[in-house]
Length: 447
Length: 191
Image (cartoon, rainbow over all chains, first blue to last red; front, side):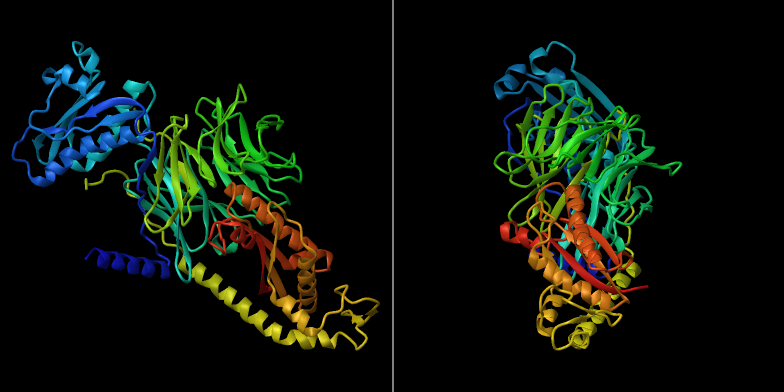
């Protein structure tokens, strides 16, 4: 039965691929591969419903809010979530909490919640975050959301995760953000490339653009509403922008040679791009409103992969002007170029933490492996935070605490995720396919 | 599973017309070059006399032949059928053997003024994707500039780099990498 279903699914995929109207996105699966036992211990109690005779499907949703929050916190790498089985004797509010029990259980924090039916298919959702070691104090968080429908529960769960993360770490959470990635499916006669967008936890995956030619280098606009990407439609490269709400694609440049590596300015008005129309690949800045194109770097070397400094005043980029590829920085006003990386013979794909203090890049280690590395810009100290042989395409969560990247396994390309300290790691494959080039969205929801 | 809220993303159809057209163009190119290969032996023999002197298109006899070596029509055809040249790691230089292959293609293009050539540069899977696009373009450009030094007008040449996006060997080892570091020659018709 199951295999039959799978077969139909495959047939459907082939059918769709043949007629070039691919609508199937590939969901990501998440598997923790290291560092489960680090982080702040928190017990997440299944949310209760005050109506005893809820239908079964409602119960599934009731449990899922807590499950989504637990999953978010665990996969952030900054929490150790303790399993709590559903039990009628579980506490329903802070007054029922017996601190001794939870201390023995190893929890420092406890999350309680409930879902209260208000009729007409809407619910109030309330939750309390309790510090077990300060049980005489009011809860750290005590919040009630009014009149939410079940279709909003998942987004609300991520929002609650963000509130808990902020309260306990002091840093804004990334649970309400999204990611883009490109899947590659190879069939006998063609290869289908699909730019896909999903929630940060891999759910709600939706295909955005699908093609039988390569798609590359997706980058979110700062408002999270558009994605710039490179297409090889018609056997030539072009830079395009797709509006997520409408699906409308606008071609931005299609000069002879390379049109690549788009990067949005922090204000979203300009796009740094790479063009080789006059010979070597060089950095340009395109004003998206006036369409004014300004060349930023010169010379016969390869300059590529621009990344805007968060202050908008300079751009980091990759260049082999010194012989080997290294990271450089160009000031927009003066076009003055300085070199940023010095360790190793291969440093490419720069990005910066939101505070501008740490550089994330692809670095070739002394052993020859291509790994994601972090360089502290004030001390120059470099740390390698991934472990495979062929890692690439690092993209930083908007809070700067986790890196998502592409990595090569024996038979497939998968995504990996690692906290900036390198302690917690995850593997994110898609089923029966390849996934590459992740791009993390900016913050999308007001906090 | 929990019902889903949030923005619906519209699915874009890949533009079928455009894709099919490019495949048609490709097919035309293959047929055109196939026909041309059938003729190339006799084209070459027409231009060459028994003593291996080369006659250029103006009928002027030159002292050495075009290739700098003596090639039989069969050797020439074999080299012309080779439409891929390979490169070393992080390298875009041509080997002597690559130059032998490209000499024959240059000659073929000079003999067939209505043929254009698309040179597609590729890299292996190691390293950054956009940097590999730049490396692949270097490879395509090296081939293009070599053909230009042999007299092929740049207007009949175009170059594109796919970086590491179109491997021909999907494995992850030295053999696969060597196969994937390549420039491919794709003939088409001008216009």
